Structures are given as C-alpha cells and as structure tokens.
Length: 332
Image (cartoon, rainbow, N blue to C red; front, side):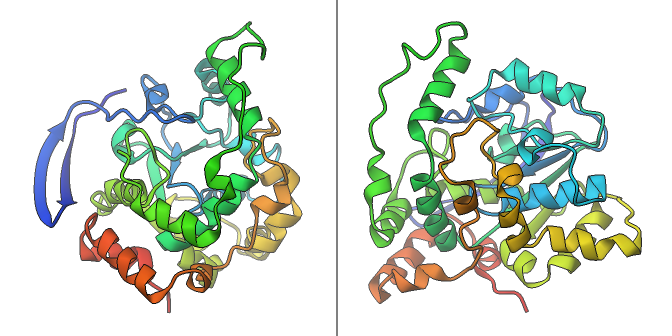
C-alpha cells in the first residue's frame, strides 16, 4: 500500500536549515545488510494494527513486551515475543514467510521495525509507536549488542532466505566485525562521526536522528505515539496506562500490578529465553545478556569533556533544538 500523505521535513546540513513541505506519493527505500524496507510494499494492514518503529536499542523490545501485555492482558504470553511481534524488514526469513505468519495471527497485531516512518506505508487505521532515547546511551548499548551477535549465523540466514534451496554452502565466509573489537569510547566516537547515508546504514548517530525526526514531524497526528526510554524507566505504570488509553485498550484495574511487574527490566531478563529478539533462530549468543542493564547515563564514564563538546557540535548538525531536547531530556 502506498498512501499519499503530506510531510514537513527540516534538514540540517553544515549549518544550512532547509524546510520542505511536500506531498509524498512513494515510500523511501532503506536497504542495509540486515533490513530491506521494500518488504513492506503491498503489506495488507488490518484496522487496529500497531507498528513499533524505533532505532535499534532505543527500547523496541521493551515496547513490544508492553504491547503484548496490553493486547493479551496477561504475563503468560501464548508464544515467544519475536513470534507474536515479527520483524518484517529483517532479511533472515523470506518475506512471504513473515507475511503468512502475520496473516495467520488472530490477535491484534503489533509489528516490529527499525525502518524510518517515511519507508513504511501510512495508514490511518494503524498506530505507529516510536521510542526515543539519549543517543549516547544507544551507542553504548549497540556496542554490547553487537558483541553478543553470532554474525556468521546472521549472514548464513540472510543468504539462505535470499537463495532458498542452496543451503549454507555458498554463504559468505564470516570474519569478525571490526566494530566488536573497539573499546566503548572509540566505538561511540566512530558511531557519532559515521557519515553513511541512513538509506544504507541505520546504525549511526546520523541515522538515529534521521529515524527519530521522521516520527517527530508527525507527532501531532492522532495515530503516531512517541514514548521515551527515560520516562518508561521512571514511571513504567503511568506510561503503560497512557499507551493503553492511546491504543483504546481497556484493562481491568485488578490486572495492572502483574502487567506492570512483567514489563520491568528484571522480569524481562528472567524470561530472556522467550523475550530476546533472535527470531527463535539462535543468532544471539547470550539471551540474558541482551537485557544488559537497562540503565541510562553509562556513556558518561567513557567520554572526555572534549568528546562531549564534539558530540554536541555533531548532533546539532542533524536536528532542531526541540527534537534534541526531547531525546536528551530527563523526566521529572
């Protein structure tokens, strides 16, 4: 489905601010080594569908779990989280397999993606949820997550999905990912300075701001919801109630305590086997380690005063102050 919709965009580039208002009639194409936004083309939405759209390590899995708890209204989920909430654009499974899986679901669907909103069909019957987080915390979490991935398994799965019937024999030989060998400071600074286009690489500061800005410009739309990692951390119960209201889901008051408890970081770590997002394909080394700490501010121990000033200058190139204030804000 390719809906025409009006969008207002503000771009920053070397100090030049350009604001464009345009009627879009096509979707942006994002193609990275792990994702392809064209897998959304022609997808049949249902009224009430939920799309959870956030950059990696901003709280996507957390939001999937919250949605699962609200939809099923019990901590006892009927299947692993990645089965209940598939990742359409990830290339480890054939597209049709994922589509068929979603078509067979009879519960209210909540679908995972890291694709920016301008690469996903806009449908007024669908609710789009984006989660923001301090980008410096995102980078620290990304480094830990990368070291926890079995990259050879991911490459083999992508190859098999693209070449069904060929098996693993022709899959590319895996070597280590150079990023996995970097210390925290070096990784973070390289992530900050990476200037790849977000259309081919969604793992950088530039891409994170690009993705968040696609939702930010649509934040006043009734079917677009912005959550923030810090607010979820400070007031999980309040944020879950707010989300339930926005999704028009009624929860019996007696159920709230157990639902909120099931969404806490410790309880999710305790259930890592069924909640870690490895699509039940075994490409995460340690599922408990995926739920690393959940804390914010750890970047502070790695960046010098000069590093922080460099980060501030760099991020100011990409976004307006209101978006940056929201991303970096501390609740309360």
